[in-house]
Image 1: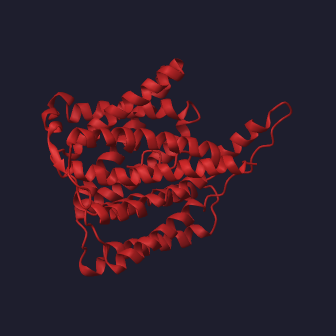
Image 2: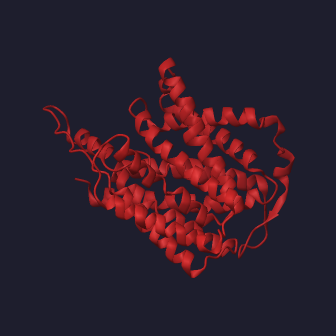
Length: 340
């Protein structure tokens, strides 16, 4: 059983990660609106995050940097699908629509995962899945306001939904990847493959480094200006590496299901920050729809049936049995691990 102080620390870690991810969406939008393209931003974010995570791996466990032939293809596919596409499609979406709405569509990923588990993997799920699906679809219809002839940018909407599908792939492939290696090296190597892809699409030597020295006006109620390089550094360190590590620490204390539910604070927080800083406001129908979507996502997050934990055999410690329970709890092993 988890100690109260242990659980409280885990909750603080999970909330901290959700807040940092929410802030990062708005910092990214400021960078995108001030001369950095979505391709350039995702390229530098992938490269910077890979460098930091692989350096941590080299210090902690150098042997984890070795990759076998069988694992190479999986890591490349995971880096391209679950890492590169999530980030790029999200950046395209927030360029064209409010940050909070983009995140709502992206965060339908847990619902997609549960549907995959039910119909492809043929695993049992709780009946609340269908209520969650109805809530999510109804809420998204209110947010998009289809009866007004589609008020959201079509390319932004397609990108946000695509980011959700890519994030679902990240969850499902991450579950497989963690059977072979630890999460930090898994993410470091995957970000490395993501960085390699973007180095081909948008070579790093063409990056407008001179533009990073430019100062940009801070939005909303924030006074003054800041250099663009500071925002890019924030996106890499405080928008990716730190919240990702906080999620790992939280999962170790709470299990992935509870961390995933706490992560639902991110769309709400991002929308609130965007309203305060960027002046992005939602009408009454969109606010109601957003709340309904969050209810649907939470129902989907708790719809997958967790298998009964194995009883530890003689000689196994209590900690090992508890770790096994944490791994099988909930719909995804790395909830909101790289959510933007």
